Length: 486
View 1 (cartoon, rainbow, N blue to C red):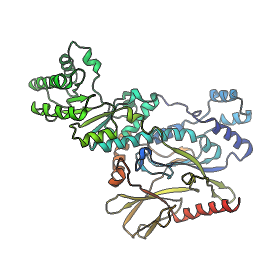
View 2 (view 1 turned 30 degrees about the horizontal axis):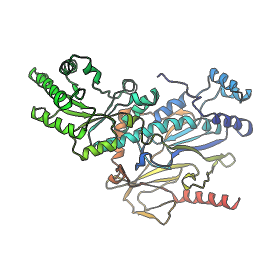
View 3 (view 1 turned 90 degrees about the vertical axis):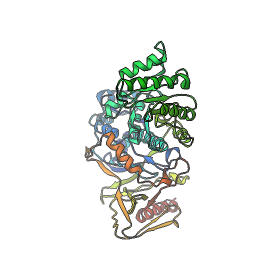
View 4 (view 1 turned 180 degrees about the horizontal axis):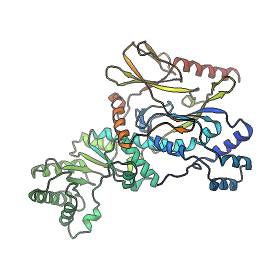
């Protein structure tokens, strides 16, 4: 998994449009594209941003090799002067983005690209591919972590992921979303995150009997002795044999740290409560009771309601694939074109019969507005870049569609934070990505800024994303101009 040249990780139409710009327009015309999404995955109340570090790596390594140029020549669509141009291609623009681990909401720019039109067009597919995937898994993980109510979640999904990259970068996103560790050793090496695991049923089955298998494992890993107890008979064999091994360890003076059992089948609520009673009776009140077996946030939530005595969860397939919501609907739309004569950006808008597909025009940024008293999110405000706000003055927010819905914030009652940060300036990276475990902690703090009502798994409260008065008027003037000029 060394750095790869992903320049051709793009849709063909990006290249055909590039050639069209090259021949028919000013190839250096500066434009703004916004990457954003329209609805939260899983019916969630928010999403978690992830993948920016891989976007940075992609942009840094963006170039057409001679092999790339030869391949494109063989496609038969591209002229020699355009192919010659590609040989010296590099990204020279600006990129702004929401930092990884940040809570985000629909319709606000996650990544903003300001660059010559050919460059801005080419990077669309890869940016969406990277941000869509990791944001999806980080968001799914945050739901699973929420359901676990403080118990540790381990990511166990590599064997079910859709290929090596999905497993590796899915594990990365899962750690950002709140997992305490991953079974994926390569992800552990690449991103310096904890790796965790126990043993399989095959370990038990390879020995003459279950007790011998347990004793051997305990001898090898006395400080990480989690025994899988459901290979033969959970209550009559697995748990009693585990207790016998723990007793032998205690009698031998071996400190019992990181020890316990794992359940991988059966009625997890019933079995865990029975296991807890048996372990407590034997004096092992602090033993870990871990569970796996096709878990997701809904099953974990149900098991919690049933009083399951589980305090550690291994979640695989449903997390690494986001099985019930397998895609994140990020899109990438043109928002403005620079007028060279005036030096100002001309706003562009996409119209649609579907209200949610009408874009927000212009060069924009985002402010997050917090309640000053408890630092919970009140709303996000999309505004034009350069708009200035004074927290010591009142602020009026309104719904951009149902404009009669208004919120008035009194002076000094709120705080504002700009979400988009510079990542590239004139083609040079100016942003240092934190380590994954640092992003994970930042994400935990971000989730704490949400009201409990917005973190519900089902029918969460919607956090409002409003437009500034100036942006709202610009958008409506454009809508009116298209209506009257048809």
